[in-house]
Amino acid sequence: MSLTAQFVRNLRSFRLVTFDVTDTLVKLNDPIGQYVATAAACGVVGFDKSKMAACFGQQFKWMSKTYPNFGCSSSSSPSIKWQDWWRQLVTRTFACVDNQIPSEKVAIIAEELLTLFRTSACWTPVPGAQELVHRMRLAGKCVGVISNFDPSVVQVLDAMGFGQQFDFILSSYEAGVMKPDPGIFQLALRQAKISSANQALHIGNKYDMDYAGARQSGWSSLLVQSHLDAQLEAAAHHTFGSLAEMLEALETQEIRW
Image (cartoon, rainbow, N blue to C red):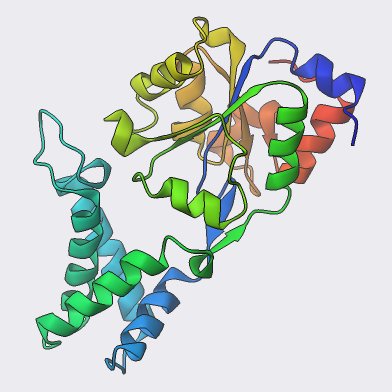
């Protein structure tokens, strides 16, 4: 499909376009349900999903505080391998739900989940994502990913049909910093061999990490959010309810960056 003249005009200032991943390009399929189902397949049954969800949320926060950025080393926190970060999260979550589960069973469940969450079984493409990425490539842009994720984001995107769509995929774990830290946006510019931040556009679904983070680093940004709350009023003219709406606006309306 050919590009509209308005689409080309809207993007003429940009050489680089990057995307967030989770809830921007792909979204999880009932992760708590996957925990319960995987445990059942390993012979551990009888879990209440609401308790599992509460324990998962509690332990995710604890892991993120104790070992930030999926265990990536930093000057202020201890480091562990990202795989061990997820193993510990699973172990702590199941211990929170029922501390009587044999440790060897939990270890098996953790390994199953570590593999499963890198496959299409746990993810769904966000509607319109493939088309928007494709249009950016047709427009001749360098197209990349900036994601607060571990290095397995490459496997996830490949499993969801995004293989070979990106010129680079930058995880926060590999970058050593998470959005909205300017360092990750600066590293993306270096990977794209672009010296000026005003030639870069970032698209994501989190106001603080994606929209504001990119702008504070000198980039332009667009936000995809189904609900516009008071926090997002400053971004109202750059916020769209879906990627399809965003693409339509880029194709038919003048975007004031």
